[in-house]
Length: 480
Image (cartoon, rainbow, N blue to C red; front, side, top):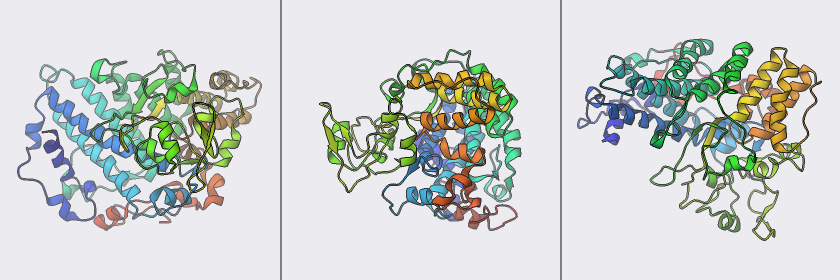
């Protein structure tokens, strides 16, 4: 039934088309209508499940945008794939990476808009979880639009179900308008409607803390440092605590620890697992046997030598973040060298035994408490509260087992320290590229790697540009 419900969504909205209008018109005559679908509390719960499925699919590729595009990650072995193209700044508008991202985000947005329209006039006696479902839907819509504007810039702003003809006329909306009219109000609404915690099968849904954390990130990205500081400070009194052992963050047998705020979660079985474990591991049979990795290792997302050199030897974050160059140690502390034909650099943040290929329990961390502390330190530093910001930065240093920063650092020195700690703490979690862009440093850092100045944004998918065929409505990003 859920599958039949979901078929409709693929066939209504313009943005969901892959390369021709014919696909839009193929609405299965046997499918139930939208009105029949939204009657009970469970109907809305199932509809949200469809949104989560789409978001999970998109976040399988998020590292290609957030990590490989920047300087801490690279493709050690160049191949004819989107990972290499993104890393080398040769990605074009016809590559599946950008087309899939566009389609998945707008598929999720269409489902959310339909849910919000259908639930609006229903009574809580009929839909007991009405307010929570609205909060979840608006949280996920804000997240989708936040990703869209960071990847593509101005995009069509769609906040209600639209017909195919109407969708042809919706132009790209300025980024500031999307922040002010959709992203910020949606996260604020989610903050008011979501719960502080969940139990049973609902554990893992977005919480008040998740909405506050991402709203703080939005404010920081839009350089509203006063509101960023205020919002992020609220989270420090909500009970979140850094885990003692940094390595425990990547033990997926305990996904929801004291530092957990919000993950894109994956579970093994029936296409529910993630691909990260296979994708980021060296293509070595011995490596696969030792870590329990089934099937191929794809050799993607390798640490750069520059990142590896930034870690102090006794930094507890080092080994799990950048692995051991050229091999690994087995249980008897014997060094096993990797074959020369595979990548010699790898991250261990997503290594976990899996029962089948591309079926890992490794999650994608959207936001965790360490990120909140680093964002808070950054906002406070920008607000002229440098001495007050440094203790939050030092909480991260202390956990890593390295010396703390002096509280006498200048504002510029503190900013440099925050940038360094974000690299050491958050590498391979999708942050670095978006940090460089929001700081205005992307071209300065990446120009020697093939980046042109216009490449702070990715290209609008060629299929969408051709489908609209009107540069007044959907122009391509400059330079592509």
